[in-house]
Length: 235
Image (cartoon, rainbow, N blue to C red):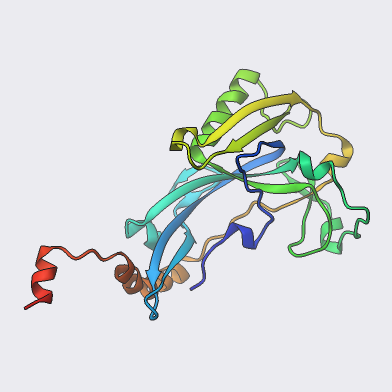
């Protein structure tokens, strides 16, 4: 059961009840994730995560209706992602910095800017982490940008953002945000290794095959017998 996990392709920052100071680098992308559970032969339930084929990160919306998971009515969640400097990591670099790999030394263009990608599982150090931002929080950040008249990830006029997460709060209050000081990115910060943002879903053929294979296991994990089902069971 191939399950998509963002943590498998990047180092993802986890927000907690301790405030995190983040300097977003941009650009911002998004993906739509499908969540469901299946029940295996050992009667244990396993969570499955898939990328929705209908979602277009450039349009930031659903642009087609071909995804078998979405057509089945499975739960979808849109997340925004961006690279960001974690200030606490930046303030404590290791004494020895391993050399960057050949892949990491290659200059690349992203939204008109020169960037360097972090190679997964390399020992190279970077204080940059991938930020996963729920859609509701992304909307609040966008409102802040409108008030400031500059995006928080702007190289010169951007700013730090303090974020705290409390899972015990109501959904609309789980994330606490506050604007930090305006900080222009230094040349060193611009050259920090970042993570690619291209989330590639399965092909339609692959997704169709996967859902056909998992559908019966999904039904087993989520089946709640109704009155008629119980009557048939005890005939």
